[in-house]
Image (cartoon, rainbow, N blue to C red):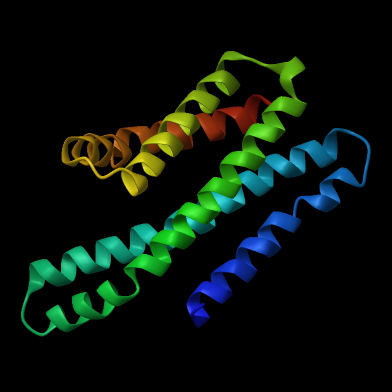
Amino acid sequence: MTKTQIILFLIFTVFLVLPIPAYADDGEDSIKNLGWLAIFCGVIGTLPFITMVKIRKYAVIAGGSSMEIARGIGTVYKPILNFHIMMNSIGYGVGMFHGLLFSEHLDSIALSLAIVMTLLMTSGLLLKYTSSRSTKIFNRLLHGQSILVLLLIALIVLHILTADD
């Protein structure tokens, strides 16, 4: 295993063990902490990847000496992509577990949030692990839709605001 793979494995292990303190207490606060952990994993997993993609895109557009920056970013693409997939998978799992524990409080916002999370997670995994050209094009279009990301953010905010009702 390379050094990067070992580091990613250790980070994955740490984030896999992080939810354990949430089960130590009885009560709804620990279940709410799982929701916050899901949000944290999603943000930490997505921001570096989006930032890297945008910087690389602008470096290619600018051309000239910035092409070296784009090539340098290209060498770290796979590890950051794997980190993105790993953190979002953990966030998805923790978020769904949070939803299962609060299933008696199910409302339309929580159900919509679960559907959008599942759609984005499924399209991302299919994008990574399928080889058919037409499937990749479809999943790239679906997974990269800004409207779905904005919908996800809006549903998370609405869920947080209406969760105590």
